[in-house]
Image 1 (cartoon, rainbow, N blue to C red):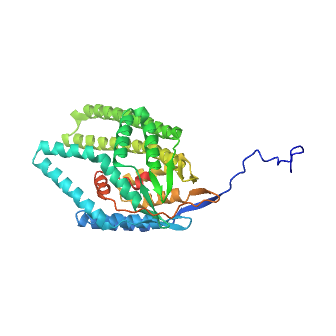
Image 2: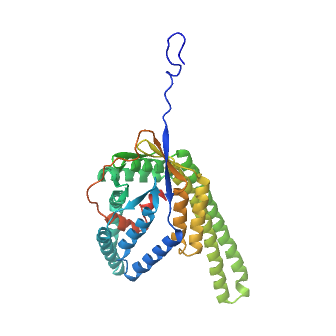
Image 3: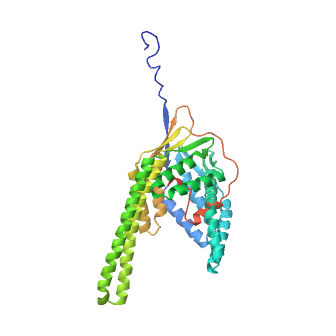
Length: 370
């Protein structure tokens, strides 16, 4: 239909709506099967005093990646265990030197090693990010991390300084995720992360409130137990008093940890939701069909059951949680565009950061997303 005077289309002043297509994401792995792989790897790692861990890590990643499908095509983790072993040996030598300094009470050497680790921590993180992204692949296309050592070091310091003020931690989170996102490429497609500051503050606020409440209740619990024990001290054998104190203290600590984990679950749940809904690959956007409250509840279930099972249920629960997220995620790709280019990252990267951060309990790989 045209305009009566000019003959122009009545829709000429409105931009044409761009069509898009949805790419399915799914996890087809079995929690039971992953649990068996994890436990066998754990046993072999213990029997070899840690030397088998590079093979264990690669085996676990390959299972998770190969069962994580995007548009029906599995992800892949292409790192070789031998590269991780080199990093493992370097880290073990450093830890051995630290233990020697501690046992011989060489305070100078102990302090020097701690200082070296703190100063090198940003570089270890940089090595770990580079390694993780370099060997993450889909459809033959590898990821890469483009930030230089200097850029990464400066950003780490700035983010750490911002985090010193408790109220600004969500702002520091947002800044950090945006920095990581704009330095990650999948082929030649740049990723970007624009997490919602409102969601980050909501999750952090719930966590902070529960943490303070749990700490207050724990202190009240200790005070009440002290009064009860003092009152019963003259009427009970000394052994019974000690056993009673230990029992009540254990129960108090267990309750505190339970509340702490519930609060932390909301922190993680809202953070993951904010990251996923703010993630883009070029112009393609990731969407998640589960809300932050659902994710928080699932985190709480995973943490609490892991605690109750003394850690044995963790691999099973982790695989179930990964399945929940993946099977409720999809990628919206604008019409006429491809999700990725065929460019493949080249060059070798060091594995020392991965092993060093694993040994201090800071895993940057799956923890980026989970």
